[in-house]
Image 1 (cartoon, rainbow, N blue to C red):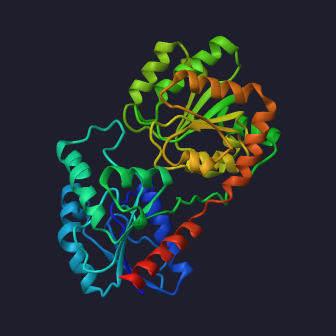
Image 2 (image 1 turned 90 degrees about the vertical axis):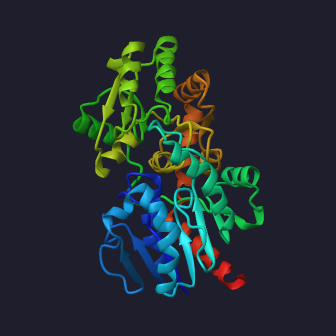
Length: 380
């Protein structure tokens, strides 16, 4: 079987869609004897570090990455390229962002979220029209749809009347092989050496983005913890600055907790592991969760997690984390307080979370995708 894959849009793992595309595309040839034709954005090529005998990379000009041109490319050029290269079926790994109206062969698309983006970057009227009107119609024209969670599948079935039998759930993987628990004294020593951080702390990792990642409610809940419980902890936010960062800093100043916050950027992998392992608690308050990687990383380091009950998070963590409504400052506060003050609950979350984190990897995700592609080919 020859599978055509659109690797658009990709930005070197700066987004969830990009991380998914790159990992899935790199795993698939290792799991089967099928051949692949990967249509790669110019700035991403080559997607494989070394040439792979089963993969043909077809590099597109850099200007094709322009959002409007990219939409047109998928509608007008991709079907022609699939025919030109003799593809038996097509896999669209970022189906919530880019699809075509017609492929001329069986099609499978992966969806990680549905509707208008919840981030702080203003969406244009054209973008809103594309994602709310055109994309749902194109989703319904796919032969089969892969959903990142059961909750998202229900949303697709309910909101666009997608046939449930045409939607399978395949959870995203995560590369956790480089993350292992380490003794707390060793982790604290490394954190002290690397970041000059010598006090207990609560940790958040992920991009600094307002309002999507919900930092303002997190800061309010942390202020409540400091005031009512008198905790000695700092709140460490480790991640790159995205949209609305100035609002986050302004809120910290307004709440009078700026000296209790630590903002870290550009954390190298070898320093992230001790940073996670030395934290008393990991908190993830996102209003939408198109990725569970930060949560899984904390679980892999045997750190207790409390997180928002949105997206695929409840399905991924199971009973291994304390969940809260991200719209409620009180619930965020109560969840953090419970895990900070209840040693048995914190230890249980850490232990069960570490075991559960091993269930999610890119190889299993890619294997499920390949299985779906084969079924679609055999029944179309």
